[in-house]
Image 1 (tube, rainbow, N blue to C red):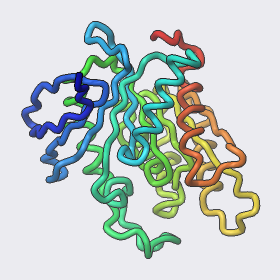
Image 2: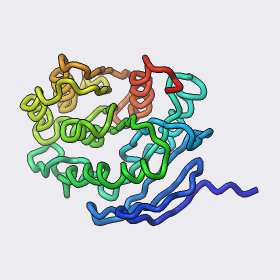
Image 3: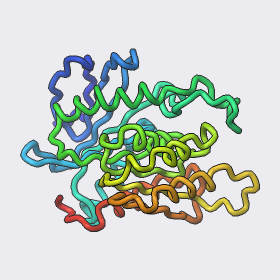
Length: 270
């Protein structure tokens, strides 16, 4: 018997075709907004059925973290029994600096390595207007949506919360680059803070220990962003320091602990 695990399906964003479900479905989704094809990999629970509704984890940098995230979801549900079954939607980048940054910021400390930036608005609209409708049409979803992003993708996750707060229910930001744009997201949050009162959201942020880093540009903006969220009614927040990890290795624990925090008071089957 041959088990087919991959499917390549060319789908126009304006006319989505029904995809046959498998343990791992690979789609090539054309975006009118981005003007390009995007690879989307959907990981399904092993006992997936259309008779049940599932939360969805949208995974930024999906080509890099799909296997990690699929394993974490399987372990948290089937072994640890801490989360429900969750559909995984991994979003691949063509040029991640363009997708994940809100502005073209030439004054940034890392400006020499950040070319072609400032495309976050288009990427967010792609997720909202094209990707989300495709997932809803083709998979059995509950409407409970989680966004995970690491580093610059963590910046984008925070940007998504500020710009389109009704798009996702929960945000896991793994060592996010909130310094970007001279801390523009912190300024946005301060200026528009009243508009976020009453939103029922979860914002989970992880940091690494940078006590010995004399040029630490990450920790202060992260602390300030979470400080500004304090006191916002119905927004559950957590800022966790993860020891003995570096910027490259922290995503695994960030995802594990973030999902555990989100579902800690929920029935694992819900």
